[in-house]
Image (cartoon, rainbow, N blue to C red):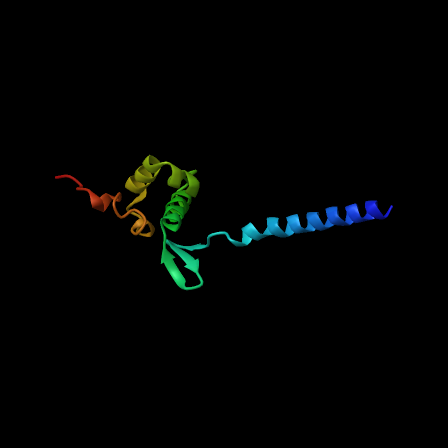
Length: 106
């Protein structure tokens, strides 16, 4: 009987520890403010946040695109920047791919 209650207690303790560790990664989520990642030292320019910004602007135009799609498919990033790069919110994120990076023609 005592062995069984000890076993139940250990299982319960293990379950509580698993829940505590499972809740931790949610707090480690990257927070972006425009093109910049928020850190305890201030704002840091990161490619992750720039690509999230591209997706956010594209969604504001009605496109169905996620930050993961922009990050994992370079062609989608280039196309999105070429089409929507005129938007002022894209200037930092699409520096090499925006309309002002190539000639408009004669």
